Length: 287
Image (cartoon, rainbow, N blue to C red; front, side):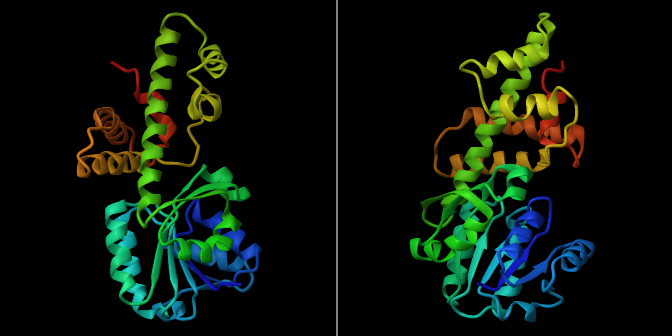
């Protein structure tokens, strides 16, 4: 079993690390919140909290599940000198694909591999180990880490060279955000016309407009005003921004992406940093 350092014990990271521990992998854990580290170590026999960078010296794999590229770059730069040659960083955050390529190149010269393996599916699939994982990197590095990834995910896809996983994750989240906004607008307009909101969702789910929001978010988190899906609006805005930025860097027009990005940024500013992404329903459709 690979000795794994898992960095980032948030809503997604904690259940993913739990599955790796249950599968028998020795774990070193780290989080920005000491209470999260302590809680995980107390409930997972043998898991060790990384109190300093020396804790990473014996690790075969480092998994990062962090908010953005700024944090990923800083964390990896700090610990990389302590990793042995042949170790692999598995970057599972939603990060900037251009910066991921640069990070991989900087590590390659020290004998450390990096693959990007962002996930989709939310907290529910993180808990039951059925995440979709999209992987970019050297095919041989991917093959070596596939058994680790299979503990956490069900649909594991190799999508191309390093950075391709992060690119596809951002593009996926852009498409998801666009569908959420379109769904919310349709519900508000239909309700204003006198159609029951639940009926609108049910009919769309039986029709060509069916999408992930109508199937898995509208009844579950939006119409009932629970707004607790576990994925923040701020993170969605970040991911859509990455997708739109990637289009600009490749000189591919993404007019709709720019509009979706502006709407998610405005909604996040209006609703606050703790807002769930399903709270776009509250923002969309208001004059």
